[in-house]
Length: 160
Image 1 (cartoon, helix red, strand yellow):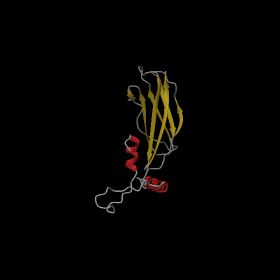
Image 2: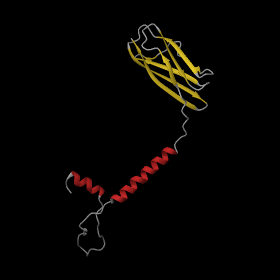
Image 3: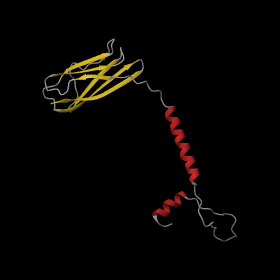
Image 4: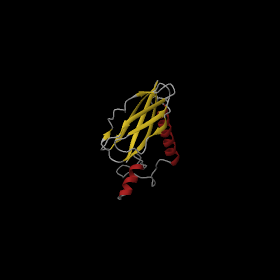
């Protein structure tokens, strides 16, 4: 077992040695065949490990229920120095916020403030696309929360 494979295999194989049974002064005897973990014991070990992982996932921290957010409309494409509007529908009374992320970072436009969904569940944001906004497709993330429930909507709009 002088090869790299033999060394690696030697780490996983357990050889039989009959220590203490040899005549005085003789070298330990080997059984001639190494023992190793059987396929069934490895399979049982893997199954047990998987079971513990699955149980751990189910016993993990409690997660808030999903809050549905539906995109109703979005101005796209939008030209620089024009207004864009995004409208969603969600649970009435949900607190919602929006982030529009451009190449330069998140937009700081005045209209992108947190809002509360109306009695019908509608929320609209209107903001001015900057004069120097780089043309391209830019991501928008809307998040809403109500009573421990959370929802997220990811979309994008085109500037150009």
